[in-house]
Image (tube, rainbow, N blue to C red; front, side, top):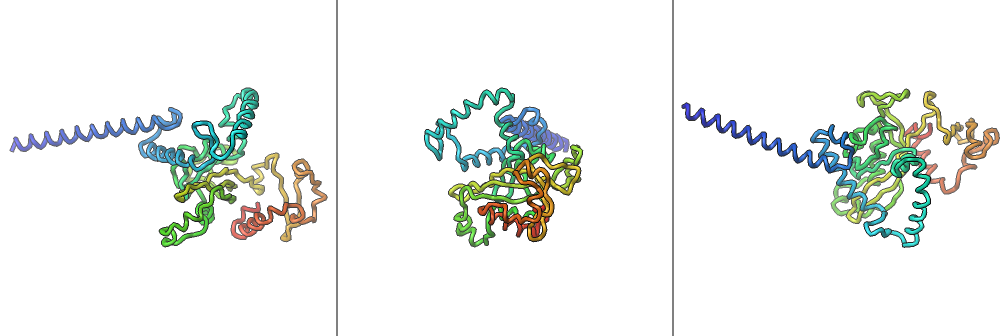
Length: 317
């Protein structure tokens, strides 16, 4: 009896040692994996195992996504261009170096500042393949928390249908998907332009709240669909927060004006900033129709906006 108990204790101890060894080895693997992430060390130190796996998969998808975009390959040759264009781009880059040095900012940061928003890349399934670091300036949410997560967790439920259409085009039945019909619909560089409500943890006073108490901010998403021959597609877009004129605590920026219209789209109110931005005197536009001012090429886009306005009120705020 004592011999059996002794064997049982030895087996339990051996099992515990094996479990400790597995956990130790697992921790080492995750540490090695985390060290390979293109992130600051202070950010990596706070990641749990689930986040390490999520971000590792997300960055692998980013590398795969870059193959869809026109870019310069390792040999310095343009994939879709000639040598002359490359030389001109190089000359422009050399000419701009003194100005960049004066600003004391990295080119990547300057590029993000010029967007007046943040970069957003979504897969056809709605996963956030990539989102730029400055998303925290607009939504209060961090890049680390959002990358690899489904956009559905952050967007308003009423916008999900429109977002699915933007990501995948028209709806396909299971039989069509099996026959590859969806792949044939994939048009490279197909433009996308829509509005989306995303969660925002920033208050009007610049403070941050818990995501459970987050409000929604209207985002204007403009970009295009990038796709491969096998039908894999990504939405590459710039997301810009839409100023909300009804919120008097948030003043409109210097490049935005406010106008009000009657049902036949005649101007009933025009912001004084209209003159500085477009050269129109507000008094000259009163009673005049918007249709007399916009370019003919924009008619289809304007009509689409009107149709959306029947269902999405914020498009006309």
